[in-house]
Image 1 (cartoon, rainbow, N blue to C red):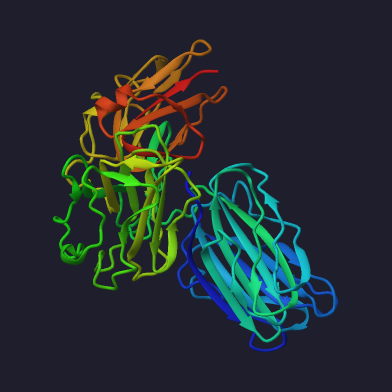
Image 2 (cartoon, rainbow, N blue to C red):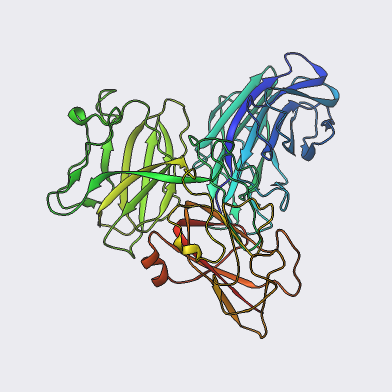
Amino acid sequence: MTFPYVEDFNTSDSASTTTSHNVDLPATVNTGELLVVFFGSPVNFVLSTSFPVGWTEIYDGGVGFGAAHISVAYKIADGTEGGTTITVVSSSSVPSSHISFTISNHNSSTNAPEISTGTSGSSSSPNPDSLTASWGTDDNLFIAIESNVTQTTTAYPTNFDDNQHTRNYTFSNIGVCTRDWNTNATQDPGIFTLSSSSQWLAATMVVQGGTEGVSSSSSSRSSSSSSSSSRSSSSSSSSSCLYGTTIEWESHYTGGVGGDWYQSGISGIWDAGNSEWDSEPLGTFGNEDIIIDQSTGGSAKAWTVNYRPDVLRVTSSDTTSEYIVTLYSAGSEIIGNDNNYTSGDIISLTFPMTNGDIEQFFIVKVGGPSYSVTNIEFGEYVCIDQTSSSSISSSSSSSSSATPGTVVWGHHTSVDETYDLDFTGNTTGWTIGGTPGNDNEYIDATSCDQIITFDPHYLGTMTAVIKVDKYMTGYGPPPIIEYRTAVTKVALLAASWSVYNGVSFLSLGWIQIRFIHV
């Protein structure tokens, strides 16, 4: 799974007291993304709003003369909405302010966004109420919302450090901010701070992470298949990444005796002469050690030329201890201390500004006092080059391909995947029926707990999705699906199996799947 990501936003206001409010949508909106509008206004005793056809309103609250009002509505985008305006109609004439988001990596068709009951008051501290996602703990995006009548927002709830936006108009002010959270299913944001006391209304919203609206994906979902579904803020579009994406890594640190930051091979990015990287010779970083600090050295220090990698990987000889990474760009926290990581984890980076550079970078061992690091790598998503090899023989093992790509077993006609393979010769365990090389080939378990194991396949480094019966419908109870993944084939065969969550998993390069009949 991956967290929902706010791809773009926009703000607007009514510019006058009216019942017809023009709300500006983000400039860029892609098909399948989740569009959300946050609408704030004052209330003349009772106020209600209505959104255009196709929008689902999940909140319309605020009662009392001079009180604050919030309306929230969403829509699954069809791709035509970018840069357009919708009209929201209010039951009485009021001013209004609006913020709009477009969000990728969501699961809203299955679990629609949810919002709390809301709380109101008169003070300088709007306090959104607690919300528990009905679907439980997941990679959830929580959104804190406040609307007030007369004041501007000067500070946001603690840990809601992302997507902090406000829009202010006379007697109409709205503010939002977000936080990624997967430790449990509940968030109770702290307070917003206003410039002075005002009537206010505040609420909390949640969006579940998923594979809808993935902005740079090869969107194949295959019958007994593995397919790419990666998103990166700087990766190529899906039209140019026909075969999905992989990660191109740059290693910036070599640990061990005499180890230091690697300062060659990244021409135009690394400023070797003025770097402020910490040169711990044994690769051991103390508790809260600043590994890079550009903020004390000015623009001549450290990273230059707008280096905005998509992912980070820290490797250690200590494979069991957990560590925390904190990374700042343009004064904002790119990675916070909300999640613990272990050696080799791939950590997504999302930069808040197009010209944001890495300013500060910390590694902290959970429980301290130090963490032994052997390698630190930053990576960028790049398209998989599939021009040299487009298929492999249906009679050969899928593991014979050294070129990454998506794969389907048991179907050959008009498939979306890079490779189409027979069950025969590429699996072991279940009975195989039908004819190899024909679309009527199928697999059939003859007893409970029987396992069929698919041969290893080189998928590449990406978010992988497994789906059964894409091209033809089978029968019987769905199997338990397990997978394993590793960087090399040798490591794959030694890796342990994990139960597939029904949504996605991160492929490290080589993957293998198996079905267990129940």
